[in-house]
Length: 389
Image 1 (cartoon, helix red, strand yellow):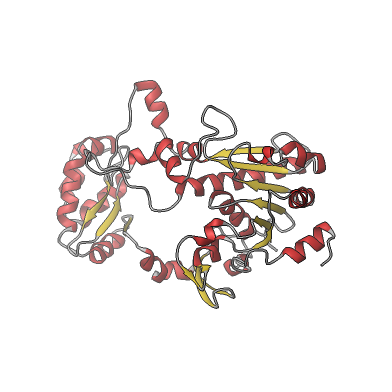
Image 2 (cartoon, helix red, strand yellow):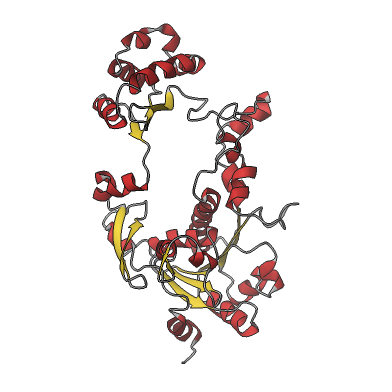
């Protein structure tokens, strides 16, 4: 049995953040009822598809029951209230105020189910001067401070790149899932405070800024883009190799630094008192990076990786999705999981849940793929609302 078996969650989610939160919870065993508009979640039209079925939604909607309801229809809104009355939690990511405008405010839902946990995910939060501004994930990266850091030092002619996935939405979804489980525990032990959870994309990114806020508050420092390096540790960077590929090396503890220098044939640098501590290495990082890069340029990425792995120096080639899918470690841990999708009519590779529970096989956590819109209307409406036909 999965850890969240018996927890029932209603998802009023679209696009990414709320559905990502409920996907994590569903992977852990929660029963998730996904409410979609009659045409389906708009994200079903994103990315590649086969016969009109999104391969992304195969993962995004997995382990969920799909029902279709028109929230502009009074009868369907009453169905939402009825479903929420039979659930432990509800997750939504509409713009603030939308549920209130259509008669589904938390007070309405709590009138039918006082213990209901409501997790609300939005761009800027449920209050504050920006609450009514529209936002997608890119705005979370920009305003939360992340996009400033992804530039290369001194670069002015190109915009700082985004990370390539919807990191703001995913972070907000993870925080919402964590807070939801905590709030459900609070209800279990009799603490009824915190029944409404407010998570926003911008704050979720901002929360990852490590020591930057206290540095600014105390010293007025504004951390600047570091490229592939990081200001607080050295040597840690991504280095060019002879085959045009890149190798990420993290040699930033004292012992690992010594092993790294021995492996690249520069034990003299390990004995240099300037590099005896991390602070000293950070102060002279350009010299260290140049020495490491001079070595990596003489080897392919795989050759350099093999040498450093033998010396127990943390390192990795930069993987693309093909490398991930074919890597024996990902395969051994079932992180790359072939799952038959009946809508697509063939096997689809799913990323497994990134958490493990003792006694639970990873395959047990992917019970079915993303269903068709409304695939469970009859089942859910009959079992929870008592409707027939």
